[in-house]
Image (cartoon, rainbow, N blue to C red; front, side, top):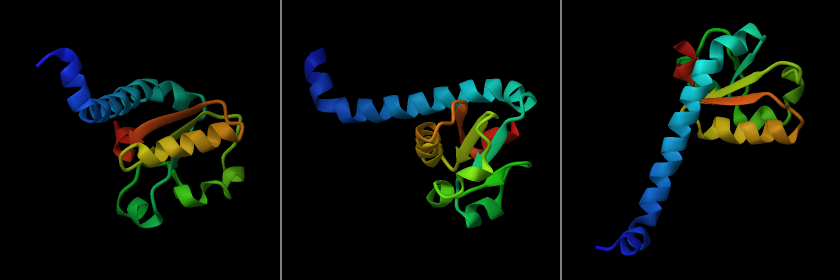
Length: 118
């Protein structure tokens, strides 16, 4: 099979693989920055549901479910870095977009909440 034919046939699979690769790479990058972010007063925000948060969470993290985030922005200062997490990195990615849209400049998506424990 020629390369062009391969791409035409498998582009959805390639796109999904690239998306997950990007999420993994970005989470690792934020994990490496975490000590510095914490030293700079980072706010750790877990956007999972209350029940998910209750079943396990990182010490010091604040639970604001994604559906409530828009109404609770006043709980997150714009002057400190914000590190977001959830179960897989998808909801925290959406939360990052919401915060950026609302004037937060230092927003980081660490992916899974368990990445805050490392």
